[in-house]
Image (cartoon, rainbow, N blue to C red):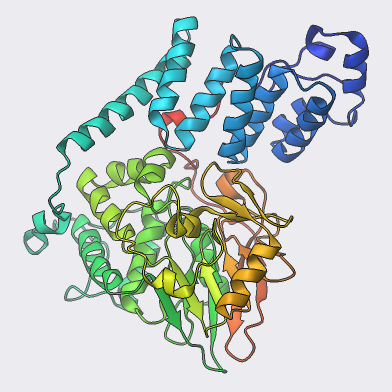
Length: 500
């Protein structure tokens, strides 16, 4: 058994990393059939976390173990826990340079760019010849300066919309473009089918058509309330899908398995349409177009990745700029701000991307009153709807993500009772089976991006709800092949976690 003194994927070192042999032998007895090194090479980060946790129980003053567990948390997107472990490593050993690296990466993932820059500066000062560290420092410094510039030019006046600067009518569609076009400026079923095939062949929709879709869907979404309320008749059903994260070919597979959206086959997509997957433009234009085609039967809710900070780091901004322009990304940002935050079905089932709230007493009326046309705040109901997660134990705890909270079954029970609801459906977390039922059946997670980021091996799922009984029916599916474009191809280089 070897515990690693390095990381990412972990490089082995001798037992105990030079500490007393008796303690080393005790640590070597922690599940000896599998090492954290193997877990990292197999991308089994959950078990790596487990092993380092057990090792830390034996030796709680080992900075290396905290740093390596921090990396495992980074890999599983538990950025709050990763930040805490990296900070703990530095409390133990302020000269442990990898601790600064891990903490910087955690802060970047959380959008805390100034804090990240300070730690990258430390790394570069100690290791001036480390090209990777210098590149990350320079990239982070550029973001900090960009944010400062944006604040400097901001004014109290209402920000002008990109729509005001567009002249769509006079945009020319070149003669050599043979792809789909809106018919008299409108989305039709024929256009949808043609566009999905066009995207399937990795072809780009003309920018005029993309702008037409965005301007029209912004108008539709801006007229919706923050809490959308619908009624299913006894004979009707709706399909609820979770995160799709730019996995366009898996989205097409959902439609193949479950049928195209229609007035008699309604859908609700529960946020996180973009980022990570490298076909996010294709996913979001398809979803927005279906919203235009069936505005009363195709529903979209905002996720935590329909936000500027996430898009800047995890690929969507880079993808839009690569396929279209920076101006178009700004329009996407405006549209995302109008996405509703929650949906209530038959006054009994509440759907949101993240989860419940950091404080008791939140009502449906409170959700109706949320001013959502903005970037989400760092706390409060809007933040919680996009970011929180359930936990098995009662009460609330600090979020593993570093944003919002984790809420227990008692929190769920009180919220449901106060608002006369039966259960909640949320997404936001990858699940091995594509879904998970917790809190005695009153909190359901659905995730619709199978083999997430081409590495998690999870199934995807969607849910059928029928008006007759509102009993969830789970349908699983597996990933389908896609063109050889890797996930995160457009992501900020700072999020490439092949670190020291």
